[in-house]
Image (cartoon, rainbow, N blue to C red; front, side, top):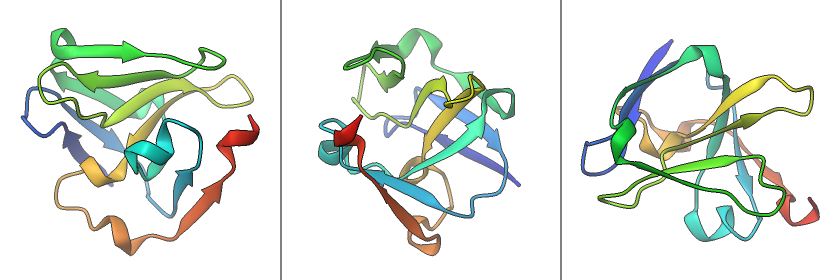
Length: 115
């Protein structure tokens, strides 16, 4: 299935393809504050449609995840990184997908504080 998402003001938009069977809620210092529900898709299934110049990047802790947020509205609708096996991934905040009911998928809790 193909989804469209982006930030609140619309300057950043993307498409991502895959099946959303579950999402993750992380308790690390960043995710807990943001309230993101994350779904991971292979990076080759993610396409930024617009807004590259409007994105800012934030990294912390191990500096391996590139948290992308809109410079205008501040919304982080996705992040870029790698899974434990080194595969490039896009972490999609499913709350930022158009016409998608985030509450319709089961949510797994992740102890990000432990990393």
